[in-house]
Length: 238
Image (cartoon, rainbow, N blue to C red; front, side):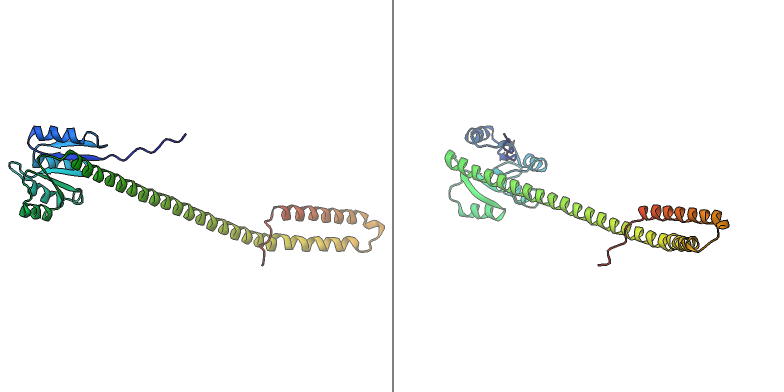
């Protein structure tokens, strides 16, 4: 039985400087199939994004030293996190200017405190699944690219082999032509001379000569047969 492929890793970054808020987030998100990474301030959040890729970032707006808007603005300028969805978590209700400011620095949504557990969980789960789908697509594209590269390598290897084979055939054909011209043709001519001499009328006193001539013809026949057996066949003229 083939095992199902493992799910791509998904991480959620929760950024808040108050421990109670972090505990509340952990409680709400514990049923979401993702790893939760926590950061207690903006600098810590930025460090985490250097080490990990996140499916979504839950970012508290009001934090000391560096508020959520400043963090989001920096994240949008970094290649690794420029497309990571950011959900602002804020205690401000329906403040249009604050929302516009958040959207201008890259927020995709706002969640207000006190948290609505079901709303937060469903939004986060959506981004987690979207992240996994995107990761799976990227992996499929990469696998298709790897397969394409292997196929191209095989095609090039076969073309090289075919080219080498054609060169070998051409070299063998040239060798056949040289051998036929330089060895077989003179040998055939000599054999014909010997055969003609053997067939001529000779006296009984020439019996020894006839025998020697017959030996020359037989050796010539064997030499010609041996050479023809190792010669490659002539290339098909068609």
